[in-house]
Image 1 (tube, rainbow, N blue to C red):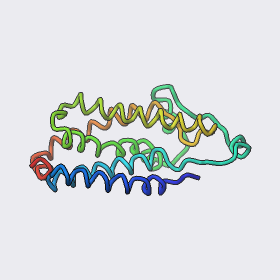
Image 2: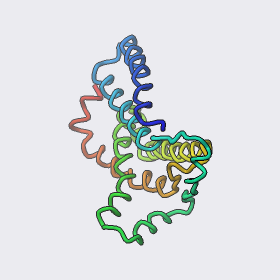
Image 3: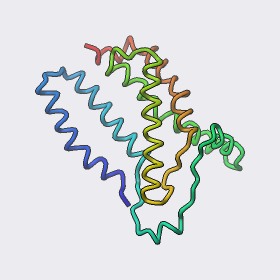
Image 4: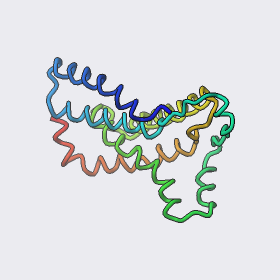
Length: 182
């Protein structure tokens, strides 16, 4: 099993190099803090969406091989609603994708100040979401096991509901986020 700790271990040397480059370029502390927060957000996002990766012998994987990917829009959402689950579990499963990408809506306009418009931010979040889903599918095909479900609804939820984060950023940009702009 390739666990998320692996990702954190390899990300630390990359982060150190990143900080050294920023220091050499004489980037201000507030921007370094912003870039650092974004870096660890991205690493955490990858840890949640791509890890753990089950690396086992093929004969063990064949037992569990089950294609559960969803390529039909809103199918998994309808499936979750129709399941006999507690309402809290249903809400958690749908809201989780929203919560994962709300920070991206704050970071993108702060880091790339010329990308403050919602369509450019939406494009970046959409491309990140598509990349994650394609990577999950690629890894599943590589190991012959659907270890993470590739779901078109994840792309829809992350992109459409993620707009909340953009509007939250617009509401609060005059206060807390000003420290990152100087």
